[in-house]
Amino acid sequence: MASDRTRQRPVLTREVIADQALAFIDEHGLEALTLTALGRVMNCHGTAIYRHFRDKDELVEAALGRMYEVSGVGIPPKGTPRQRLMGLIRSLRRAFAQHPNFALRNLTLHEERETAELVAGALALLEEMGLKGRNLVVAYQMLETYSIGTNAYDFAGTPEGWEVRRASRRLVGHPDVDRVYRDVGTVAKVDEAAFEMGLEALLDACERLAASRSHR
Amino acid sequence: MASDRTRQRPVLTREVIADQALAFIDEHGLEALTLTALGRVMNCHGTAIYRHFRDKDELVEAALGRMYEVSGVGIPPKGTPRQRLMGLIRSLRRAFAQHPNFALRNLTLHEERETAELVAGALALLEEMGLKGRNLVVAYQMLETYSIGTNAYDFAGTPEGWEVRRASRRLVGHPDVDRVYRDVGTVAKVDEAAFEMGLEALLDACERLAASRSHR
DNA sequence: ACCTGAACACCGTTCAAGT
DNA sequence: ACCTGAACACCGTTCAAGT
Image (cartoon, rainbow over all chains, first blue to last red; front, side):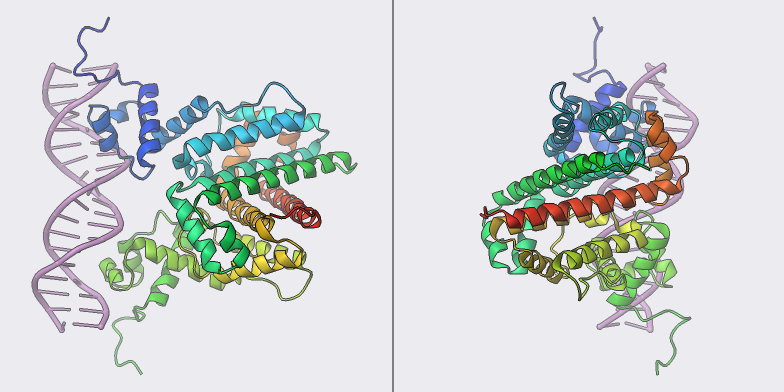
């Protein structure tokens, strides 16, 4: 119905721009995202973006929000509380595995409005596991910090960073380490095994805390 | 013995510049570190630094190295393997608590030559606990990722970020959470309790893994 | 109302020129 | 050998001018 759009430029709206920024960051990385570069991709002047976003930071935040949406981050509807909690944390990890260039950005804190319902859902699951009071808060914080922290460290700079981590490991000169890290593919596998092992251990700790009678 | 140094400028050497950069980052943050700003502090032209460092990244890396040194990061000489391992990880956490502006920088991987002996020491302690082969590598990776990841998430943007995290928590509207986060001081306390709880749980998992007969 | 183009302040980095 | 100063390319951001 649009009369004549000038040479295939999409309509500039917050969502369209955020999606383009998401694609750009996925392909070229966060450091490469420049307003003029993004404008070139969208067939518009880079400064036009300022009509829709206050500054670059707000744009990147919107792109991160879109990433959460398209990645299907959420709590699985079925299973025990523990299983559903692990499902949420694993869905977060999958999201950053697919969009590793957002891993670092997720560490700097902003007002999190969109994730508030995920937090509420996770808290409800921990309550179902028997946690309450200060124990509930500490357990939640432990899981959030573990999830965000490990995602950031494991995926920041991947896949190029795998070779760096592997080289650093072999520099140590330990025979067992040397054998495991013989090829680059094992770096991600070890990271994954370590993540799963840690996740199970932390949830064990949550269950133990729930079983203990001390709750402030 | 120096004949006449021009108005209190220290001799420009890698170590002196790195120390000044460390102090600057501690005070003003990593984003505020500009070569011209650092030059102003040191009474020299900003470009003079390029005589001693290849680029800004190399300078920041040197500052991070100095931070490790002055913070006394290391393995305590006495105790059980588990205690010594926890001592190392806690010393790392103390270092970033005192120098939070380095928390984010530690996530991007570089060739780690200086920390190689710490890695070797940690591996030796895990071996004393009975770990070997692939299990040893996975356990080590789990602890390293936990340490670096939690430090990054807990300290990036502190102390200003505490208020942001607290505001985000109260946004959820959960009564228990609301009560715990009544004042800002509790944010750091909850983070600390969560870190300790997770650390113990991960070391429990390492001991269990060592006790199991499956290795490799 | 929305976009363009020029402009501003500020980066990291290079390099010829000074001493 | 080491530092200075000018210069370059490139940022984010602002704003008057166009349509």
